[in-house]
Length: 209
Image 1: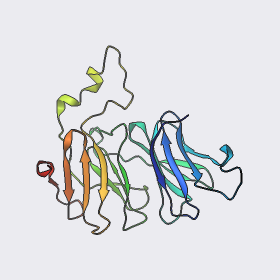
Image 2 (image 1 turned 180 degrees about the vertical axis):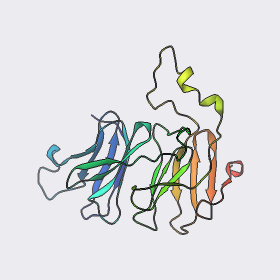
Image 3 (image 1 turned 45 degrees about the vertical axis):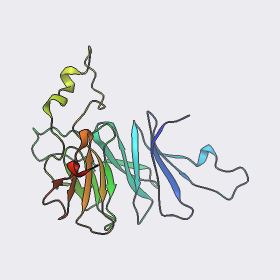
Image 4 (image 1 turned 90 degrees about the horizontal axis):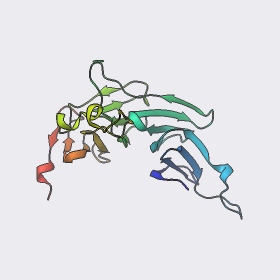
């Protein structure tokens, strides 16, 4: 019995299913087989380990893709060699703490197979499959400092697991129509949109009904 956070598929025929599990890493498996006895346990392949969430397959080559786990960790995998390499974004200012949600946001760009987005309180963009990153937004969250003291207020014992980060981005939705339009959602209710590839952002949460 496992607890999957998210399920994704790739573009292969037959397609493969991907998912990240609580306490049990990221896994992939063919969706179906021409076998009387169906899919066996031996067909499953582990891609990474941890409290894993989203798995994103590279749209042009399903041999590669991205897995993510607690603490904002994100890795690029190679299913053939079983190599897995951390590609977690950092901030150019080492004193800036990146607030990654327990289940951080990741999204494949629909216009460029090598472009991927990842989120802390900022939106991070890579155009080379995670080799390098740039920050294309200011802090898009509420940035409420009273919700950022988890290291002091998380309980009677000092217990920081990564699940206590708040004021974070939790969803990224690049437009499939316009490459310059990207939507993001945060915990505590911000809904931000850019129409110029990240140069400017507008919080449209007040317009929601």
